[in-house]
Image 1 (tube, rainbow, N blue to C red):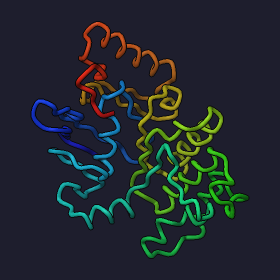
Image 2: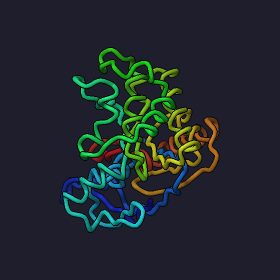
Image 3: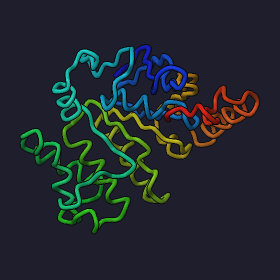
Length: 257
């Protein structure tokens, strides 16, 4: 998937805050991509525009050959249901449904039958075969997030978007979720785009892109925790040297991250 010259601002006039200032970026299929940047750099806004959860003020987003800019609400809903998977920080499971029912929910909404072989592969990969009859309250946080990951994959989407997927998890549970996302790329050929603030999480990716001030400013192939941490420290140093130029958290002009 790809985006060209994405621009997005919130508010109008003197109170307007620019979240994206002209981002052009491509995400290769079958790869695990991480998006990082200082607080307020525009990374979550970028994710939401890429996924069709929010609309850019200008610019183009393509999922495969489909252009989101020309879609009406019905078409966007169908794209998000059939071609895009989502993993959120808050899990977003329905409490009255079992793990299996939560995983199959996108197919049920679409009125489609499950491919049981694919279902079994996904459930095996997330290690939940013995928890399918349990409801979310009977699962740990890590297990709930793995249910969410399985739900994101069940439709065989073009791309899975993960927004801080380990933000509510301890380090062990977070590693399990990241390991599964990584395996989904390597074993299933899935494309994953993940927003994270954690250098250790970014190290699971094949590539990291860095945003600052609503712009794409750097990228890194084959990241390691140490290399990503060093790059993030450079943002902090730049912010201290020129307040407001990179760290957009100053009084009166807080960007959306």
